[in-house]
Length: 304
Image 1 (cartoon, rainbow, N blue to C red):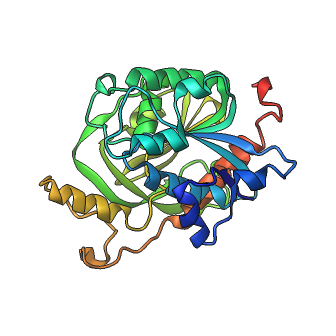
Image 2: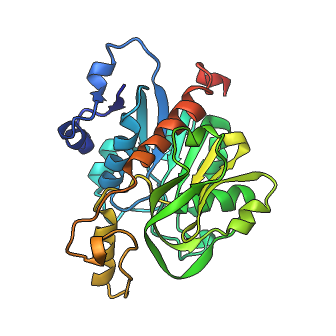
């Protein structure tokens, strides 16, 4: 089943070109079915790129989904036009009385700042508090996961000596959880961050469950609130060329970044990267939608 999106959203053309099933608002009006209502709080600078990556993962499931794109009102985007945001995005004031089956909170390039120093931190905390009563299950990604772990559980992030960038192997530590149904014992996933959450802090916290970790990249997946909060410390939704683009950007900024690990063949930045994580990334989003949202959320969202 498809993801329902606005008729003119640019991601529509990209996804249709890839033969991915999306449904416009006009067509959805003629179907008698309750789709899952999802909100995506997109904190990334390149809104359209992140939308497309997430919608690609969400669309390849047997569940019809209706998506609201959300942005913060306390920060003015420097990389996405106001016209684009006014056309395709809502802010928190627009949706605060709405209930959702699921919410995705993305990462953001602010991880070297203390949480309280992020311009929109107060608003983000308000949204996370709101989600406890208005959203059945929330998926947090990268910095979004660090922010959620800190806000809800007091788990701190720590600055790394150098940026963690590359594709790393992870072990499934809890094999009987629905999130990892169909997974191999080990799987690859991309990371791109300057901070970390420590494994010991998760293991020693009585209200959190460590689901997956990497010897090199550390914490990957954490469950909280009985599975109604899923924290993913990597970027499973990344495209094949995303790490390359970030690496070249950082080089251009003179940051002295290391070549992403396990990414370019023979570490040759002129060679096309090999994608080794997409199947597990798709399975993660499919499992979250099916087992943590669709199978559990009440048909009448007013019962949340």
